[in-house]
Length: 201
Image 1 (spheres, helix red, strand yellow):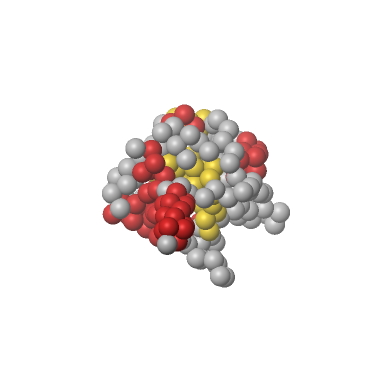
Image 2 (tube, rainbow, N blue to C red; image 1 turned 90 degrees about the horizontal axis):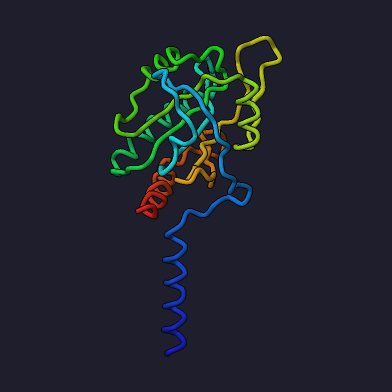
């Protein structure tokens, strides 16, 4: 009887410990390199501005006609769910993969097409060279960004959503769009963010 009780207590303890952390993906764990950019309000935004907050990051561009519109709509709905969950110390950062086109004014207009929560910080970034962003995406997010080879303006880039902790460490990623067997995991993302922000308190 004593052994059974001890075993049950141990299982419960391990379950409680496991539920208090977000399990990182094995191929992540790197801390994001420092960067300096300009946001949609033409204000400087740097990696230091991310300190002390949990972030969700992705790659987009405003002339994208395939994956970016549904991904941005998913992120918009996600901000609304984060607000409903009354979460603080969380933000979204979207890096433009077409910085020559995506000026702060263009990014600001692009955001006006959507209706994100006004309480969840969302930074749309530009103000760097394409080559810089290409290398940054590969080195930090393990994501390939390539200029089109067919003469179009459609930049090739990944659609993942990246979860970054308050120290700038990349923890895991999620699918950014519904495709095949993969679906946008709003509930799981909110759950993970809630866990991480709760651990900050």
